Image 1 (tube, rainbow, N blue to C red):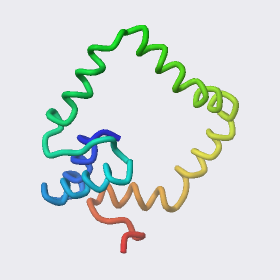
Image 2 (image 1 turned 90 degrees about the vertical axis):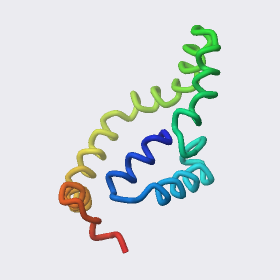
Image 3 (image 1 turned 120 degrees about the vertical axis):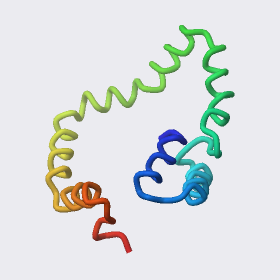
Image 4 (image 1 turned 135 degrees about the vertical axis):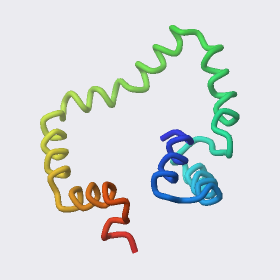
Length: 111
């Protein structure tokens, strides 16, 4: 999840900027995002600069190395994962979550 997605989620949820900032900081603290800040462009600038300075072949091979096990596992377990996904998306919780989102309200499990 990118920092901007945390902010976008908060805007969709109707939270204010100070709340979004504190949630983004907490997300960074627990490792959900790598960095957080008030200005996504400013926070991402050094990361993007580092990527731009990296050799394309090195980036491609690094991506291949980092995703190889995930892709192998997905290929091996695709049928089971598809069945699990179908079951979860058909669940009562999924329906409640979707309905709550569309109705712009909290789902029933929110205290």
